[in-house]
Image 1: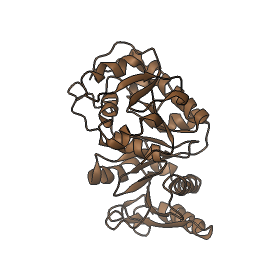
Image 2: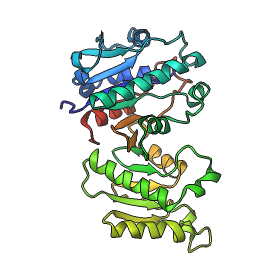
Image 3: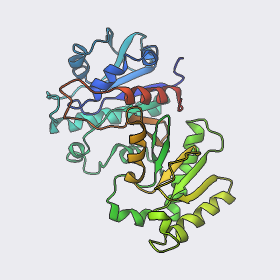
Image 4: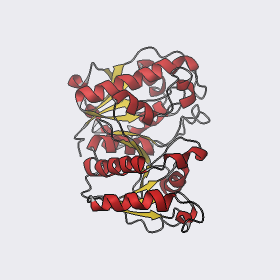
Length: 324
């Protein structure tokens, strides 16, 4: 089935497994038959280096944009500036190049009405160059000048959204406010509707404290903040329920999405259920952004043993504009 959306791809840190999993994703029949919809922003050196070791039998085609993409070719927009590097060893001098690829891809997505697939980056490496960089999601929000985005992890078995992401645990409770919850739930609802084509999504909201505070014994956020907000949104027509205790909420998943209060409340669950095909999705941007749900994996980057399953799923969701 042909993609109905254009897709821009960044490969992340060239020293990591991003380029490898993209080239290996070309083994997927679905990806291969949609190459005329996929444009990679990369220094040609990065693609050429691994193309000789990963057998895909495809030619590299340098493109100026989506107007001249070819089938049966790896179409790429040349983003020169990548310094020499070794697989498995990050090179700080490539931070500018990596960030440049991201910036160019954002512009292309906005100008060409395309969706974005991002490869894994080393956040610390980029932050040493760009002081305000904390992660892909936050950087995309700031660069596109939108008010609210939501990090979502999705697999065939489960979809979870995160109220807070890369934040020290001691700071999480301060972010559990009615304003933040309202923005997160509405962004989750709209994303599930717009991109996953779910009419009137059912969303479960987890509590912050063990056993949802157990009537105030272990905290009052559920009583004072979360429950009142859920009741308010229900009156507005949202199909939102909770709060649910995180230790049992995932046992009988009857919801289209589950909103967790913090990163490690949900990610261990979804990654344990289905690590290989879990995809990181960003809702709230002017375009749909998907990403592999793994890091640069420097420990195996020079062994060429990385699993491309997450990249394949990220490309499919971006290309079809919805979860499939």
